[in-house]
Image (cartoon, rainbow, N blue to C red):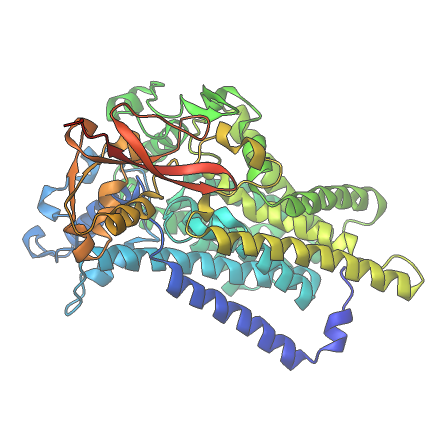
Length: 560
């Protein structure tokens, strides 16, 4: 365990002030930055899914004609849930934003509503950071280590950036991590209240992505071998945990409208849908047919490949987009856990470490071996970043631990370890500030030199930066811009509705480039750092660390 040198030097009240200040600054960052990123492909899709569920829920209590309208979408134009291809996507976490928008006296413009949803998305991440801090403090009884752990999570560029707009993968990551924290709370300090909270959190995680189901068997195994209640039989230990899992499954059914009719059949279909992702029709799902229109052409190591055919797709993506120091600590944490497994008694702390490692490696190996459809980097397994960081913190604790009888040597070791950690986080933080709002395409020192061989802005989030640039150089003239989703992942129209009205009025969107005078191209499936377009000339490239994220083009005018 990391020595408490700093805690002894600083009174507890000052530690409390430092921790509170950290979270206040993080919340302030969310308030300030949540509107900085452009639109992304799935933003309206998730809103539509939530709106269909919103309409279905309220129709149980009132006539459809009396259901309050929400911004952006017209309720009478939405299909019924059972006719909707994305009906298996859970939106329970994000659904409150729709009910807030429908409250009497509440009025949102389209842009304000989308920005409200983004801040709400960030609040889920913010809660997860708090829970991660409390998890590490609970496990190690060390304020310094817990604060460093929270800072590591915040200073993970892709996660921090996507915490504002990724209302699926980051929301799932958040509630998966919150559920692990609540498991730890019950494991170390059992109480029925903690079990109830876990049941609710795990239900939200499962509703967001079905992968959350891994929490239930992992939790039951942990409690079944728990050393905290020696003398009790295996089944007696599991009495309350089994009840909690049953309660959580009930909550999951309650917040998942697609399960209200034919719960078992739709539950099994949701697994099929999760493994196939987008591109599967309702007929394919019913017939269990493997038909996929996405995930077969992802830019990976300079080639367009189907990620499910390459077992190392996820490890490589993780290895090039997570700060290197965190990966070093992760390896140290694994070695520490294995060494302690063979050298000491299996106590509660070691058992929970093994539980977290099991969740990480078990889930990752299951997804790889099942050849699940993957695309857009490694976002479908973002939920494993919490367990990965936990193992990194184990490595930090091990590297900074006293094991010598000489206090001076031990203190220098601690200072060196914490110093390296601080240097890594400072470097990463400076990089994030320097490259904001393009920090969502972070590649670490390992991947940076070859970043042009991988997908970059696969969601077209840089479209906002590109459109603001075109607005600034247009001199108030009309901007005829192509909005083809092959150019900017279908995000230009979403980015446009979030811009100030004065800027929106400058743009005229066309689907095909031949009708437009300007292009904003996001680098997704193209290699290299230049992308010539016939009939257009490059105006500006948006780059990070010498790799291109997006480019603005202008039509070449014919010579008079």
